[in-house]
Length: 367
Ligand SMILES: [Zn+2]
Ligand SMILES: [Zn+2]
Image (cartoon, rainbow, N blue to C red; front, side):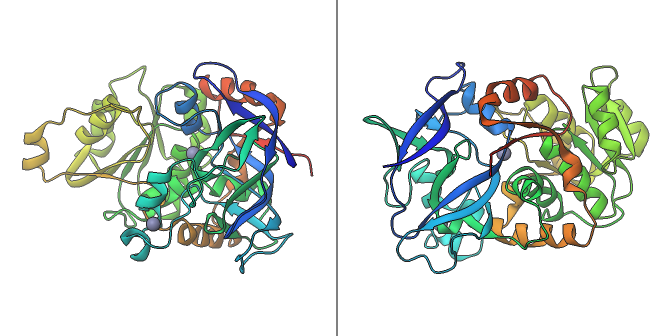
């Protein structure tokens, strides 16, 4: 049996356990990749803290890149040695959303959750089956996933940069560029400066926005955001954020983004959106979180509240566009990477994320 070292979540609010797991061979349409890089994302942390539900035991990790190791029967577009980004929504290719190009909204993938498209699992610890987050589970030296999860990258794109494109960078840049109200010259506010928030700032700069106002509760994160294009920064723990944004923009911003996923933040984002403007919720809130919206404000001021999931378009199309910007030197994705860890340091990596350190942490696997 093929073996892989992986970090497993058995119970919420307990450390991830490093284990050697058995891995089956890839089945029809599946690929084994050797993981090169895995990003440490707040979505993983939601599952670790039981703020979102997932089948357990599970190998988390949904942002990363690697190298194709083995291809299963029926796989035509990949061969061993290909360098790939993993998409955390692979798409079934058959549902109405996949067939209309919105692979990020695939209903079959969502219904199957951690299982592969034949409804089964590929990992075991002894007799116990282990789930893979989003059919990936990148906190493992090797993983098996559907071929649709993979996007081949050119040699000029380093694997650490590619890894971040798999979640944070696509979610943030796509969250602004693919939203309806996005156009050059607008004023925007970005609430929350984690990997997704910083990527949204990057997207705002790419779009040539006018005022790019970054909001967070940590001064060092605000300072860090200026590297990516923030023109104004506000520490919302020290000042009345709504008043401050109104002061900077006079009448509110054309677009506001909650990249954190919190009812208070979304409400502040709606309040600071100008007439006919749009508030976009990009950050994933804990399950059950809801917002009380001032309906008079929404109606009289013709405000729009919309959601953006995984760049709002097909991840493959999002990856293609972002790689294009990267290769032209328009975005510095590597500047997001502040910390690197070994797989064995994964619990420390999540502690650093919880403490709100700057930029992205990534796990680098040995070659
Ligand atoms: Zn993520
Ligand atoms: Zn589908």
